Each structure stands twice: as C-alpha cells, then as structure tokens.
Image (cartoon, rainbow over all chains, first blue to last red; front, side, top):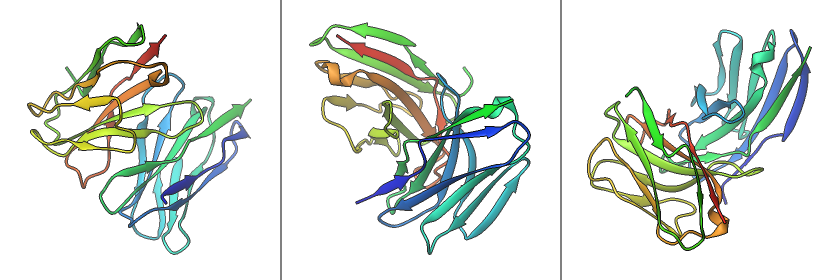
Length: 109
Length: 113
C-alpha cells in the first residue's frame, strides 16, 4: 500500500533550527512535496524534490533520499509565524499526491 | 478573481439533503482536484480532472460526484449528505496532471447533521 509517515507534533524555540522528517512508500515515485498550512487556511507550496540531495530556499531547505524513501524539511532561524502544520506529500506513478497527516509545529518564544 | 475561489465558505446541512460545492480557477490550469481534510488524517483525494471534459475517482469517491464542463469550474456534489461527510473540503488545481505543484482554494467547512 501507499503510505506517508511524519511526526504528529513538534515543538521548537524561536530562533532555533528544526528538522521535520517524512518517510514514504508509494507505487512509483515522481517527487516529494512539502506544503505549509496555517490553522484554518489552505495548504501552500513550500518545496519539491525529485532528485537526491538538498534544495535550499531561504530559511527553508528540503532533502530527499530516494533509496531510503526519506525526506526532511529543515527550518532555520525560526519565527513565530512558522507555527503551522507541515504536510509531506509524495507523487506516485500516476502523479497522484499521497499526503501525510501533517506535523504541527509549535514555536515557543 | 485571482487564483482559486470556493463557495460557500461554510455550510450546515441536514442529512439527506443535496449540496453542491463550487470551485472556480482563473489560472487556465488543466488539472483540478477535490480533497477532504479530517483531523488526524492527511488530505484525501475525492475526485480529480486532468482536463476539461474528463474526471476520475480518487481515494474516497463514494457519495460524491463531479463534472468538468469547462476549464475554470469543477463543482463537487453530495447527492444525499451523511454525517460522515462532515469535513473541510479543498479544491486545488495544477498546470497539468504531471506538474504536481497544486494551488489550493480557501476551503469549505461542511457540517452535516
């Protein structure tokens, strides 16, 4: 079956670094996405990885290991506005997105 | 309009009633999707459309139907609502089916009593 696993909740301190992990199992693979979702709002696109390695975009970076079925999202210099849920999604052989349940990130001052 | 709009924003519905959730995008995207989001679960695909005139079933299609008469509109209909359809519904679109960056509408919060 197809499955995405990510932690339910994480807590971090303002100004610190946090890494949110995601493991996936899909029928075929066409890339790994990270989305941010603030409470009561729609998900918004953060990053896309299809090749192994690290993609950096400002304070956010995303890593992919296809052989391990593993990705992480790294958030640096955490700000209070980063408090949100982070959704991991893998694209399967039919380009359908398989979504994780999301990781709720709580930032403390 | 800019992006994707959904209507209504929220709705309380009696069980057994028919309801259509509306979704319109102005980005000329070929692919459109309907998801439901429930607490503790990931987004689950209900139906999708790869291009105007075609639709397909997702992971949880039972009790829902869609149509795609043109590029911009992708309504979702609940023929006879049941309490288990209480959820937040998101419509999304992407440039085409193989380009997976999806843009989401603001969502419709539906409560079925």
